[in-house]
Picture 1: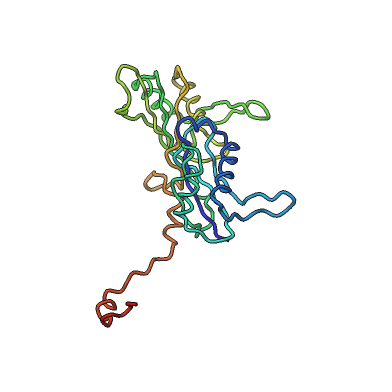
Picture 2: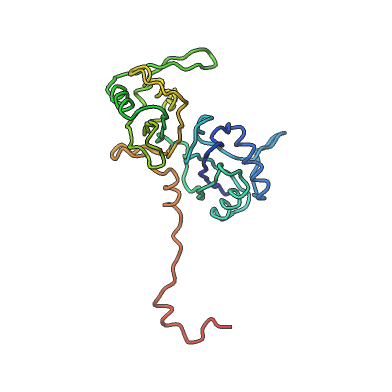
Length: 259
């Protein structure tokens, strides 16, 4: 089987798409594009699609990943274009590589998030960010299936900072923009948990829900403090495309290769 890894987005109103809704839309796109999918065995075969660390419903994302298994080889770029054309606008398939290494999920160890807080002044956000980062622990609560769970939201946060206002925002209404780098730990610390932590340490409460977007996710580089592209190892492992030999072309007999 050939394995293809894809990066896709959740943009605009499609950020409210649940993971199950995306699964249904993607499987329809596979059928429309006539992708030669490999299927699981058993009484109810399913296409072999592996999803990795999907973003929570209600958050946008520029970096969602999945892997599919094919029974026939296909060009990744051509396959990407076919699937993208069959998906709704906002659920865009933006990158594709042939899987040549193992452990894609193991390379998703951190995410970079952007949070836009309408109605919050940048100065107030900065004070809350400093208080959060200076704290040793920031306990927050989240409702789970087994009741309310209390955990530390601070330990997973590698970096949290305020950004300069973006040019698309009018100056008459305050809007704080935060950039967050968070490790993928257990229990998972989500952007809304960090917002709960900002409320706990500095009483920062946006008047409207925050607009949250995942910008990247991948392997966290301890030295540079950056999150790297998880598909890069597959590109680097691809065999080099042989180029024409200029010397051989110069010594070829005149008329060689002509019909």
